[in-house]
Image (cartoon, rainbow, N blue to C red; front, side, top):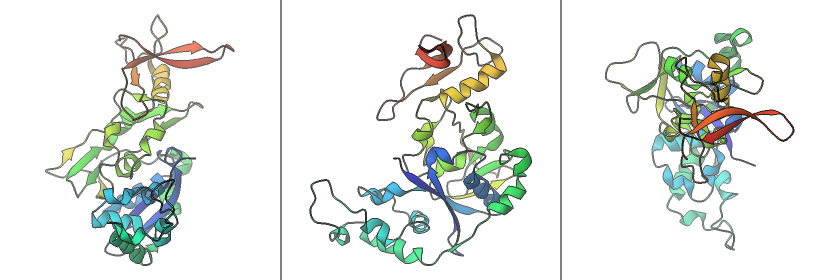
Length: 299
C-alpha cells in the first residue's frame, strides 16, 4: 500500500500549525501540489519548523531515531497516543498485545507527543497560497531566492534546484520534485518518487537531513550560510526533458547538451544503493510501442 505522509509546517512558540494529508510521498512532493504551495507560502512569511511526516514512525520502534524536541513537536501535529498504541507490536509472534508500550525507552516521548497534540491550532492557507503563486497561470510555486535552514545555517539555491530537477511527465507537462518534502521527510518517501531510477545528478542521499528544522525562504543568501546543492529528478522524466531540448545521438541515446554528450541515470537495488550509470535510449516493446530503456553502457 505504501506509507502515508503529512506535510507539517509548525510554529512551536505559538502552537500554530498547517498540516495536510499528503497521501503517498510521490503524490504530493511536486511544485504543483497544494502541500508544497502551502509550505512555500508560509515559509515566505516567516521561519517555521517543517516535517514531511510519515505514518510509519509509529511502527517498529522508529521513534527512537528522533530524539530532538522539535521533532517530537512535529510528530504531535499529526499523531497522538492512540496512533502508537494501535500500531504497537514487537513482531509477528508477539502475543503480549500493546500493554508493554509503557516499558519502551521512548514511552516518555510518546506521552510528550500526545500531550502536545491537544494544543495545536491548525490553520488552512491553501486558498491564500493559491492566490499568492497565481495557480491558474503558473501551476507552480516560485523558484527564486533561497530556502534556508536556520537550525543548521545551510541553504538551497532555488533557481539551481529548479534547473537541475525539472522533468516532463508522461503527458509532457513540466514538473519538479520540490526540495522541502525531500529534505524534511521522516524516511522512506523519496525513493518512492525515484522508484524507476534517477538522473545521475540526483542527490537522494540528502533525504531527511533537514527533518524538523527551522526553515524560511528569503531573497538573499544570509552571510555565513553553506550552500547545499540539491537535485531530485526521476530517470525517465529527466530523459523526456532532454529529448525535447537536445534529442538523440545517431545510436538513439538521449543527449544532455549541445556537445552530443549522453544523458545518464541510475537505478537502485532493494537496499537503495546505486547501480552503475546507465544511458537512456528510445526503443519499442513487443507491441511496437515506444518506450525509454536505460542500458548500462560506457558513456
